[in-house]
Image 1 (cartoon, rainbow, N blue to C red):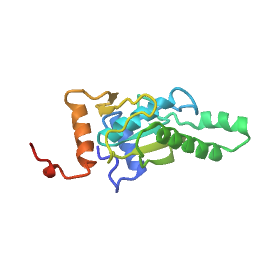
Image 2 (image 1 turned 45 degrees about the vertical axis):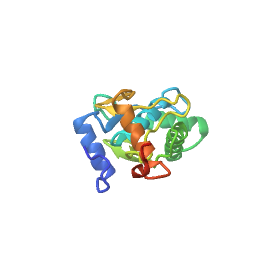
Image 3 (image 1 turned 90 degrees about the vertical axis):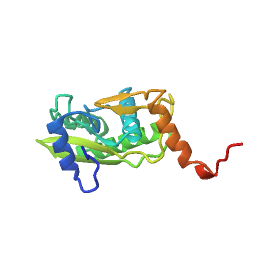
Length: 182
């Protein structure tokens, strides 16, 4: 899909995602409350994207490609804290960044933005393909990859060795050509 191509704008990513639906590089999520169990879904999806080709998580879009937005939930949150919706949105984006960053074993460079589509607020989390694979969940140590529109545990016989061999080769203190058989 090329969702994370450097010259592709966030608006183009979202527009294309809405037309095509969820897939290898796109995940739709409804509003996910701060400090809820559902936040683990964001971590798992970010891990899967990083371990494969990268992708984008659109928060505020349902599985039927309908833009629901997160503004109603942000208004509820801002009422309890005497803050405006813009401040609630910025805090929400910060929480999403902190949740994903704190839930993954290696550092990810996330691009998180928000935009208004059809009168609704949508948060877009762009996750690049990782350079330090494999990425895993800090708490569970689970490794995921993206297969189609699903986050799955890599096959231990085929997919996992590919992730690990790349990591081992890239992090060797010496070049693989320096290994001699005895």
